[in-house]
Length: 317
Image (tube, rainbow, N blue to C red; front, side, top):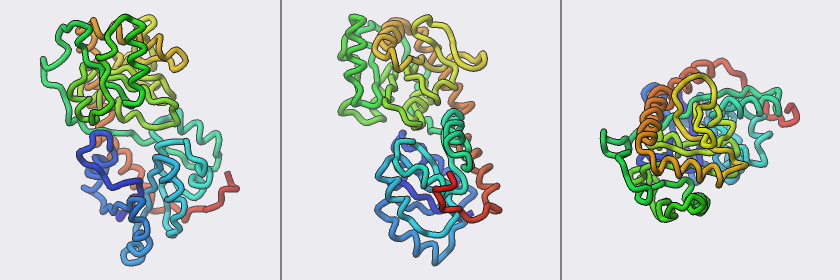
């Protein structure tokens, strides 16, 4: 198929947090894809006139991108990729799309309840594994004061430092501000991913850390609640099924206390860090690589040709 992919920026192939760049590489094995970033949207209509696209993929990551893409009027079946719910024009965007894609089942259930006329699908998010640990590279016994903690987003490093201070640990262990994501993944002994508030965004930082065999502490959200996890209050597994825990999951309502408990244990327990890191990497290999994401997209695209024209009518929702 010939696809037009509209997004905030051009793919950043060397950015570990741009999972769509890796997805596009995988999809190009079977499809012709042209990228239109927000600054090049003016060329979309003329490109479609010269050589019509079969489908438009509209990737929504922030309010500014949502507003820019909503202004596009090219008559083309549209697949809406919702990577944040925090946009005011979401109902109109969904109404004008033939299919809406989200990363988690819980988010899909919520949108189906809010917009009964919408066709909402879940497609796996997949990340590359470019920062994998080498055997024995990490998780050796360390003084807890020397365990390096990578923080995402870096702006929330103060939350991690306060949690460390509660447990009598050095706040200097937390790294993030001033470093690139790649530097954080390479240098951290464990990763804390505590983006908040959460509005349906895919947990890219967490998945990349898992791919790199890093033990991860993350907030429990509608998305991460689907993963097997450890509860830092009891250190017992929770979540669906009987799979080995792949993250430590903390309650956002008890963030600093639970985060302190998690970091105190993980800073001192190299064996647990190694166990979690290995389980996380295995889970990523089984569920969340770019190949998994591409398989989900290819299944969706095989259905797309017979779809009728979009009904650009927000009132139906």
